[in-house]
Length: 95
Image (cartoon, rainbow, N blue to C red; front, side):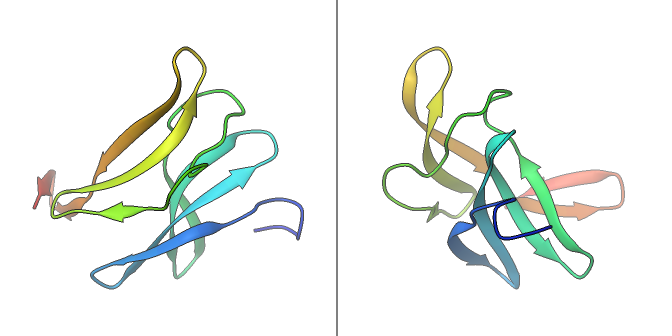
């Protein structure tokens, strides 16, 4: 994160030993990210526009998915689910 105004991280949760969070970028909007040894890595951008994520509620962690409410350029507020898993050679395994 480059500076105080470059992002607004919120809604931190743990999945195993990973920190998952929502960030609000002033240009890209809300994005799901995680913290690595090298810094912040974007996992998923729910909408290509500058729209918010995590506007209501929090991150909900399920057995297979991370859920959050975000703004959509067509419908408005929606519940989104992102599948978390592990990378094993060339396959992504969803728990």
